[in-house]
Image (cartoon, rainbow, N blue to C red; front, top):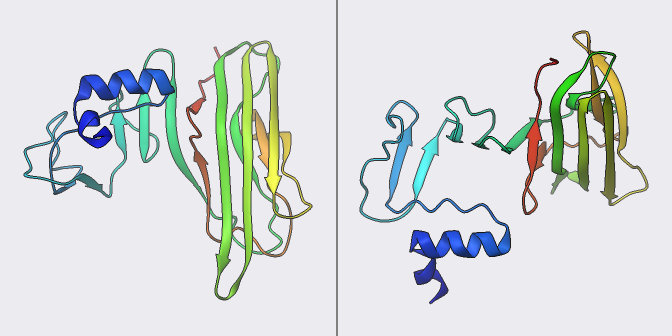
Length: 200
């Protein structure tokens, strides 16, 4: 009965508002499309099933999505981003979040959400890492906090660094032998936002 109720877009939006979850119901069917096949806003018609987008990022409210799913409106910039793999054992690495104040007034920049890194297989050590992120920078201030949830004693750290002459707020990935060969992603919890704007 709940599944049938969610087929109605108005009911889905009402439930989303109550649960604070972004819901974008798309009715339609079993179709595979490349980005070139889908014109702006043209999903075509399908008999049943799900829409699948192959080899492309999906944008809602933006014509240049910067992640597998990128939802943008004037208040929020929501992205699900695959960050990548550390590149090898004992590799020092940081994840750049956004610009930090460095003497020049900043536009609004922030990262709110969760980073997930993982490793493990029949021949690789188990390692699952979660970092809850809440950071921001605007005007002449930079603030932030992270909470590292790790299955070992190493913790992720909030740091600043300079890259391409820009000072960034970043997260330092723990330095150890068994790198996160399964990859690292910035993921939503209930609602996640990430915004990086050039200095003003």
